[in-house]
Amino acid sequence: MLVLSRRINESIVIDGKIIINILRVEGEVVKVGVTAPKEIHVLRKEVYDEIHSNNVQAVGSSRSALERLLNGKKSALQPGKRELEVSFSAAQAPK
Image (cartoon, rainbow, N blue to C red):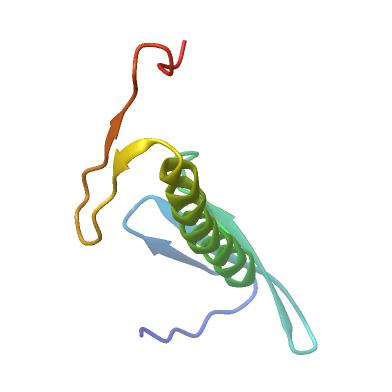
């Protein structure tokens, strides 16, 4: 971890694309401005952690839901394999 000291109105540049500006210091709170290209997502860490947690949970529940769905069909879902084979008769084929 790089630790830097900055004063109000001073900045830090990351990779020539992201600029971190120190705007204000109010007690123990530092107001920071971030300028970054639109394709770079800038999130508070607690928001990032919540999104990541929800995504991990969704992947787990999606897999179990898929397994439950496929148990009623002619299918083979083998643990440890990334491929999923599903067989449908012509009458069962999705339209």
